[in-house]
Image 1 (cartoon, one colour):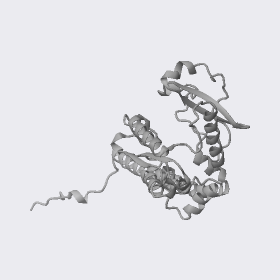
Image 2 (cartoon, rainbow, N blue to C red):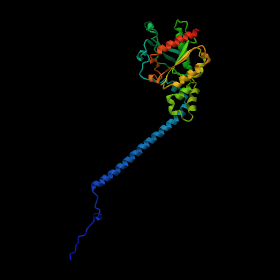
Image 3 (tube, rainbow, N blue to C red):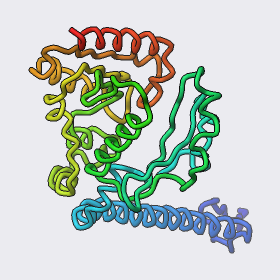
Image 4 (tube, rainbow, N blue to C red):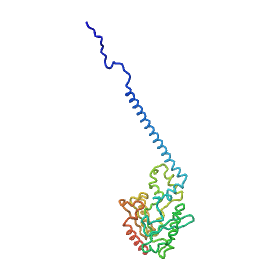
Amino acid sequence: MRKRNESVTLEHERPAGPPEPGCSLRHNLRLAGRRSVRAMRYGLWFRLRKLLIWLLGVYIAIPFLVKICPAIQVKLVFLNFVRVPYFIDLKRPQDQGLNHTYNYYLQPEEDVTIGVWHTVPAALWKDAQGKGTSIRWGDSVGTPSERGMTYDALHVFDWIKARTSNSDVKTPPDALILESPFTNIREEAKSHPFSVIYRYFPGFDWFFLDTITMSGIKFANDENVKYISCSLLILHAEDDPVVPFHLGKKLYNIAAPSRSFRDYKVQFVPFHRDLGYRHKYIYRSPELPRILREFLGKSEHAHHH
């Protein structure tokens, strides 16, 4: 009888031999890659979290900084330190598309200089050339305030009166025209784009609005308009992002029934948002000359009667 010495060895019973060099290298590379990705993700998240914590700290610190230093809020109200575009030459109004316009400088108080653009009728353009253009003190200087702005406006009005031979120029004037006005500084500040990120901040009124009024800035147009004794025209664009349209409309609704306007005309002219006039481009409206002509004509008629 024949014996078979050969034994059958199954594949899975074979002893494991040494791994192939290439296979081990690929495995190590995969592990290293996974660790690197995890490290990158962790590092990115750590930096992002650190940035968010820093931004949150700044966000919380700003209201306290404004409350401690009210001068910051005053500068934000007037923004007299901002010039956009920066390289504009205010001594050349013709570069801004203003024809027959001269740049003047007045000094209502010591250490206070205000720049004025004076537009003269075309018929007087040649006669006006060369007059008063030698004054060059630079741009308006001085620390702005509500009282200072009021005084400056009166100074300019007196300056105009002193240089006109028309005896009809008097106080109060025949008419007042307001472009994009607001009711008062508190309502305007609350609606301004700058306040969006803090509008729902706890204590918003105390941190920001009270700080403004405590600095002597109120611009209470809703109160002052009740004492005006002349015709009033309010112009406002519906797409105004700086002074919301509803504030101009609200001011009109306050003025219209006021007893001070009993014998005068009060008119509100809206400009549709599709026109794109926003806060400072109403002057581009081709309808503006007609609107002013009709209003001033009616105002003069009402004043004489």
